[in-house]
Structure formats: C-alpha cells, structure tokens
Image (cartoon, rainbow, N blue to C red):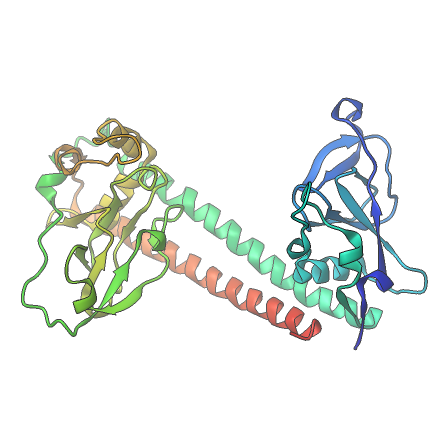
Length: 365
C-alpha cells in the first residue's frame, strides 16, 4: 500500500468567516471546530468534504457529506489533482492520525497546516478504501447500537420500578414502610480472622459508573494491602457514594461477582446490606432515584468541598417493603436487562478493537 505525505494527498483550505448575526437559518450547515454551529443559505463547499478544527478544538474531524459552510476557525479538505480519495475513508484516517497532538502552544493554540502536511497518510487504492470504509462503518454502527441500548437501559429500569411499585413517597400500593436501617445493615463491620493472603476485589470510586449504577472494573489485591482504612463489603451489598459530587452523579452499585466474595473500597462509600425482607436490586433502584439524591443533599454535613451524607440519613429514610415474590420478579427482569447490555458492550468492544487494529495496520503502527 502506498504511503504519502498528507500534503501530497489533500489541501487543508481555510474556512470563511461568518458572524452569528449573518447566519440566516437556511438549509446549509455552518461548521466550526466543534461541529455544526448554525445554518445558512449559501455554501462555501458544494461537494462532500472533511472539516478539520484549526482553532478551539484543534484537530477535531467532522465529515460533511453535503454542501457546507466551514467558518474561519476550521480547515476543509480538498483532494489534490490526480489523487483518488474516498472522503469517508479520509475522515477515518485523519481521526486515527490524531492531529490534535500537533497543536501549537505559542500564542493562540491552533493547528499549523504545514506541520500537518508532513504527516504520513496511508493511501490504498480507491477500491480498498471503500472496503475499509465498509468494515469501519459496520463497527461504528455496532457502537451506536450499544450506546442506544445503554440509554434505553437507563430509562427502562427506573420506568419499570415506578410501574411495578409506584412512587415510593406516595406508596400507592399501601405496603408496609420501614426505615432503611430496619431492613438493611448500614456499614456493617468487617469479618474478622480472614487470611491476610486472601485475594480480594478492590473498588475505587472511579470504578463505579454513575450512569448505569454498576462497577465497571475490579482490582484484585491481597487482603493484607487493603486490610485497614477501607470500606468492607460482600456480594449482594450496595455501595452508595456519600461525598459530593460523587453522590449527586449517581455513583451507586450492587456488588456482584467479587473475588472470593470479599471486597474493599474507598472509605467514601456507605455500604447497605439487605436483610431477609428486601432484595438488593429493589433497594438499589430506590436509592438511585433522583428524588432520593435530592433529599440526601439536604442532609449534607461538613464544610464546602468536604460535604457528605451522614449514615443517619440512610438509617432513617422510609422505604415501602413490597412482597418478596414481587421484588424477586423485578430483580429477575433487571438482571436480564443488564445481561443484554453486557452483550451489546461485548459486541461494541470487539468492533472497536477491530477498527483500531485495522487503522493501526494501515498507519504502520
């Protein structure tokens, strides 16, 4: 495959100034370094092109597949005479080249096109370019499906909770209410006499995904390394971030699949251990609700920057206690939803690995 300098394959042409007041809301997208920033009735470029961030989001790449108006904080791509180039292929290749690393730090940060022109650019035949685009488009499609599945999961579980149990504040089913402190042990003491050589799962705050309420990764360590000064938990417990802004960002998780069933984590977690009358998935969804977090904020103690939710807030909060069979049914549906999400994530990871591997090969890395 031929490798040429970027300047031999394309020209990075300057965009044209267009003040906000002059954009008249036509059908032509106006592109800045961050993407579409407005609409106009005239185009600077009539054919498909690539918008490259020159100032601001330096090196950002946007494929414009229809007539467009790149403004003066951008470059747009023109193919050099005699070069056969598929613009979609070029957009993938430019993203992988990461032109942002060429950002100048003197004066106003920006991308000097002469620096960019010296970069190596892989230029296979037009037929091969289109074959590569087909593979990378499929990978991108899988990633979009995964993101859509994640978004739907975020919406589905709270909606299912409300449909099955109603608003906990109103308790429309008339179930018995109990405090969380009655149905859960809060910050239970660590087990004693554990073998100090035992390998356990360590969970830092950064490993908790606030959007989905899951632990994204575990770090296996000998118990001896994390035996003191850390929160203790086990499979089936619920982690609840007690500090701000982690609590406000929804950093909670139902603990599952710990190494040897034992976990240690940041002292900035409260731990809830459900008792016999309540199911972990139900409690987890209860405390993940925005209304619960808003009430928790009102209980903050400490000074600015050091605020946290006290244990007493959790202990005194009332929670309806539905029949166990209804809770178990809810937990089974939630588990299936997460399995579906994990399959989508695995497919997306495979596609992303394929995309990266292919582009690495193309660029000779």
